[in-house]
Image (cartoon, rainbow, N blue to C red; front, side):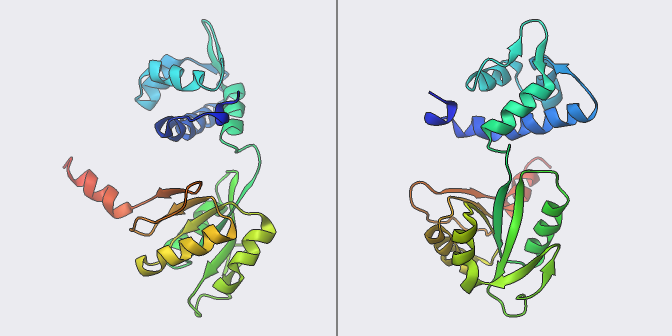
Length: 207
């Protein structure tokens, strides 16, 4: 039985990219191995929790030496499905969408925005990086032809659910939603919400 064949707690999955980013930073500085104690110290996490998280997917550590950085980084990339390029469509190319395009273009990551779509006539034909903004009428065909399974929604609240419905009908199974609204999706479709305003409001508590 593989790790993906049974239910892994969402909180564990969300920590894996944190571990991976940390390991990639260590690789940049030519660090060969790292202990769970060091990882816990640097990431402000419990070392026992780190060991428990990683043990779900296999026995990666070497007793007395910790984890080989390059090997664990490669394993985590595979577990997350980042050992191959993951194409993404972005719907909504306003200020936020354009910023996301720029950010993604310069990131060394397997997740790549390969299609831009917008429903506003003034946006159609604009070029961001290597891609031209397409009309919404072409979205379903593009997603199906390219076999894309992940999308980003960066549209106004009023349009978010209808855009979501179109994406799901086209075959999208994972959505990063920047619209400040909860989306209704069928079973089998995963939505991750990114609400900057809510995050700032939460931070205000600590002031």
